[in-house]
Length: 332
Image 1 (cartoon, rainbow, N blue to C red):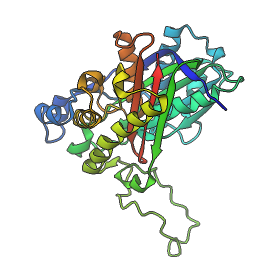
Image 2 (tube, one colour):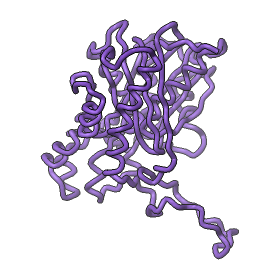
Image 3 (cartoon, rainbow, N blue to C red):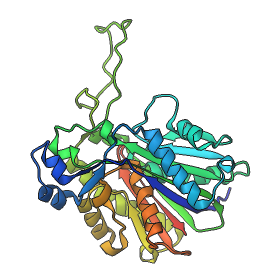
Image 4 (spheres, one colour):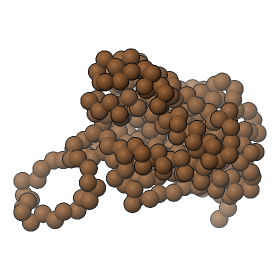
């Protein structure tokens, strides 16, 4: 069955009010503004002061709906991507549905780490190919401050909290994607759920299933060097393959919006892809790494700044835990 492309009707974003600068981090760990900026490109991040994931996500959704003049009752599907849900159940998507009044939407969460928005975009496009789903809402919402170890100077400075959203419908436009997963790299970037001991378990007879070899706490653990190697290869691979599937060349892209993980990663990946950094949209210095929220937040800013015009071909590309990676090439 042939699938149509998509049209992004509107975009939106939201962030917590509180911000943390590099100088703020220098007050709690042994670091400095110069050290952080030269190694990551980050200057400021937004940090939750108690705003839950669903709340920030709902605000991003409302922002996108307002810009697109979208009636909440017309939304048929809500996909929320997050690695930081407030509840194991209900889903964050259901909480967002409640807040925005999208009473006719089917809702579910998706966890593909920092690649979540691209995976959700592709999934929504497949739902939209059927006549009973006409309008979809994707919300990528993250409160990474829940899982950051603020005593670890190598990782705590990297992450921020944010949400991005878009409303989309099926359209006769160019679309292609390239998605990948590699569970053999699972331990390179992971965070555990809190463990609730079961008094009925016979601990002496309990089999050992866990081979990730990471601490049994609830902090985010990352093998930085290995993740860097993975990301700098994954980004050019996914963009190239998505362009090939679309029948276009990489140099036909007007803009590439990558996951905002680290400026050095994006610079190396751009070199490997053979493109100038001028084509890579970056807003990392204002938000830090916001996992799956980073691409839609950057997309919303690029649209607001007039960086994307009707007919432009753009690539959205992510890479992250799982390991996962993926790119979508769309026509604006």
